[in-house]
Amino acid sequence: RDAQGRRLLPLIIKDVAGLIPGAYKGQGKGNRFLNDLCDADVLVHVVDVSGSSDKNGVAVEQGDASASSAAEDIQWVREELHRWIFGNVAAKWQSVVRAARSSERAAEERLLALFSGYQGSKNAVETAVMRAAIDISQVHTWSRLDLHRVVAHFLSVRFPMCLALNKSDRCIAAADHDRIAVAKQVATEQGYLAVPCSAFVETTLLSLAKAGVTEYDLGAKSFSVLDAAGAARTLELTAGVWDKRAEDYRQLLATLGGTGVIDCISSAVQLRQPVLVYPVSDLRTGVPIEPPNKGKHGAPFRDCLQALPGTTIEDVFLALKRNAVEEFRLEGDFIRAEACAIGQAGTVRQCGKDHVMDASTRVLKILTNKKPAWQQQLRGTPR
Image (cartoon, rainbow, N blue to C red; front, side, top):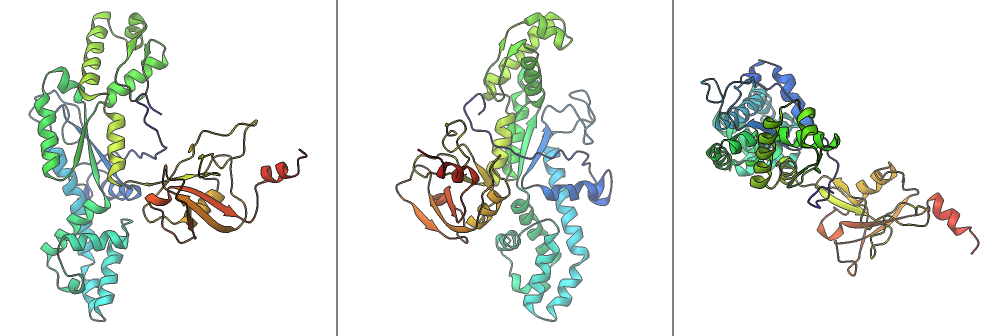
């Protein structure tokens, strides 16, 4: 858990840097950068809200004419993604028209295939078409404007985006709260979630804590200085500059309730919430499925698996057979599953393999026809 008691779950965060205006035309890393995005479930767009960098990410002085505003960054990145997908789909649009000569169904299937390269599900494409209020059965008659509308909605479904308004510490220290407010307003108007944060302050406080000169935990709302001189030496600052930095850091934490980094990541996850599954050996007590360690059970509901929406009990069963829980591998063939909602052990459901995980089956006990080795040993131990 973090310093505020929030449970932390593992995530894969992929740093995809290098997007510049014109990437859809091949500038910069071009399509190679854009293709890297397809692994992601959610995008976190890191925006310099302080106005101290240009569109290419090069540092400039605040107030410099070449400095890019957060509002501009928000707009052009989404436009790059839109033009990338639209260009690819439009280039192959004649294949949809040809398929329509065979049947409407063939045309629909071809449309779905054109979006499959972005790891978008059939449901994602159908949702985009529905939101665009266009008849999918008449896909071969769509205009370019119709396709633009579908791509725009597909982007919002397939690539939900959270904006990390980074370097907020500079704005707060300069009492320039308007920059943050304007960026949040622009984000809201365009349908995005925006979270003020400072990655620099978070990493600085963590490094100082590691050096033993401050007390600070990941995501905490405050920090304590144990050795001011040591902190100044660690950061290679004079005592006076460190004192000013420390005050700025405290002001940031007081304003945001932390550095905002954990809040930003958590907010991004909420845009495409995973299905949380708690595999247990006892639904009532929440005892984990791993064997007892020196006679002691693990903490209740200790293990938590993150699954995609639509995950079935069979998917969870197969994951447990592949060591989804550390130092435990489920043995045997599936018999049945017993499940309940969190805190509802009195209402147990009997479920088969095909049951789709939902709120009523978050706590899960899977029964197989083979006991784990440790259970077999206990069974043969004299009492």
